[in-house]
Length: 268
Image 1: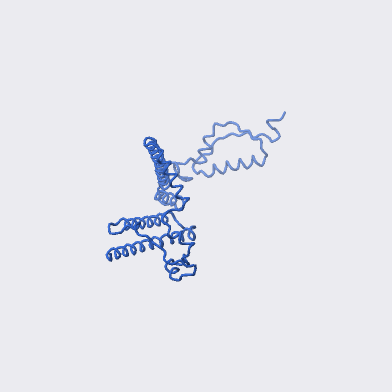
Image 2: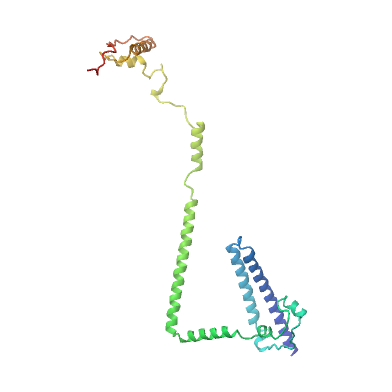
């Protein structure tokens, strides 16, 4: 008898320890949801759920252990009921149950669900028993198909989002080429001083001078100019200066016939 009592006491202590850990984890998770919801992340929520799931599994293992006695065979009978405040009960229940009276005993010592919950559970059991095996199998297959389609869509969305992110992060230019182009445009870095043969300066071999241009126009026999006398004089002086700037060359024989400004070619 003493061995069974010691085994029961050790099992109760283990259950109380596991229940306390589970209660603390639930309290911290509820605190996060109520006070830190603005900066709460999904990985943190998953970690909290994983912690709660692990503690629930540990509690179930303690209950299913071979050394744990069957608690359903243990009956709790209230010996004293009093409407007065009980400090020991307050301390043990962390302030949740101040008195142990006729009002709280049916709730705290209940071994069955509430009558409403029990009635709903019976109704669900009856409805489940009416369904045949074939109908239940079809419903299971339909549910599995829906879940598979949903998982496939979620996986497709994840793959598309990942591929889109890779396309956005792909580099479309070469930084070295960009820097070289900017340096060449801004500072002339990497550009050579080579010029083609026809790009020599004025007065150098390879570039036609003004005399050549005037000589090429020697076939013109008559030039009609309808400008003012001052414009005619400036044009003639410019031609003479261009011819004089070419030493060693004879002036070309350009014959000009300058008419008066009064003879407008478009007068009627």
